[in-house]
Image (cartoon, rainbow, N blue to C red):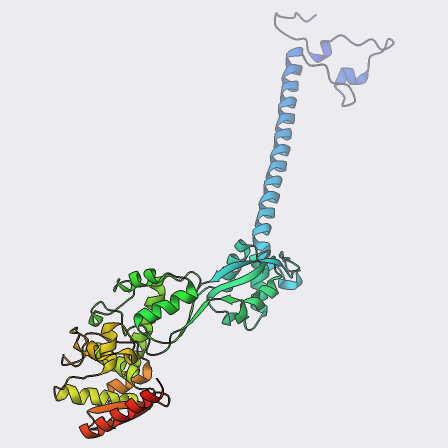
Length: 405
């Protein structure tokens, strides 16, 4: 008989047989595969259960991680498609993204400003902000579709609210939609008369225009003008925007004068002289063809040191029309008394146009030292180098004046 030592387990063949109706199973004796394994000790079963639970937890964590990763990938993909889709709409047969547009025709009215250099997109942003169009996209689509859209001019426009985008493009191409103050300044007006005309159309006070004129640098008046705007406000028809100020208006007129002087070829050091001669010619005769003749009379008198003796110069100094001069006016001693003082007047006496400026720059050849307009209705003027002929012309003018007083 085997003596079992303490701590030793019996060998398998020594384990008690299981009572199975009085027989012993073969598998139990020989460890057959068909036999059930012997139950593990309690400690072993606990370790096995722990490992199994750990494996299940790991499997669950792995599934959760995969699900989260998939969700993140789907979310990122959706975001990328959302960003890039507009770039590819309509490419490869895809449908273009619809943009908001009003059905039109609109209602009410508002003013919008198109600035110099604005693109279709920037105009669209202006219109959308003002409530004219529903979206920038609708306007840019309509802008691109209209072949004339690139000719939209800068300016202020009055447009209905909630317009159809294509109608908005058409409206901006319609000159009647543009808001501006049209001011026509004829040749020969003085600065004071020009201020009155501008004020009447724009409602800018004359005092504001006078103040702007005093700021030579602000309106771009060149140094040769000596700070006096007279003669530098070029006569023309201007379209001023509603937002125009006294300074911007006068600056535009001065810039126009400089442009004309440069275009004709007047040297910078002769600008004031030419403008002054032209301003006198502009006031003295009615026909552009005679401006160069007046300039020659002025030139001949300057060279011979004869006072110019022209009523228009005296009248400017007195602030009255030449036709209203009386004998006593010629006795008033001021810098514009052309009978008392030699040389050109201190400043131009009006704002001359291009024709008189050209005539002053290139006087017509001749020996004339006198001229007189003998009929103010027809503008007939006599030019002569003879004092007797001048006196005869003067008598003819006085006869006309008596008949038409």
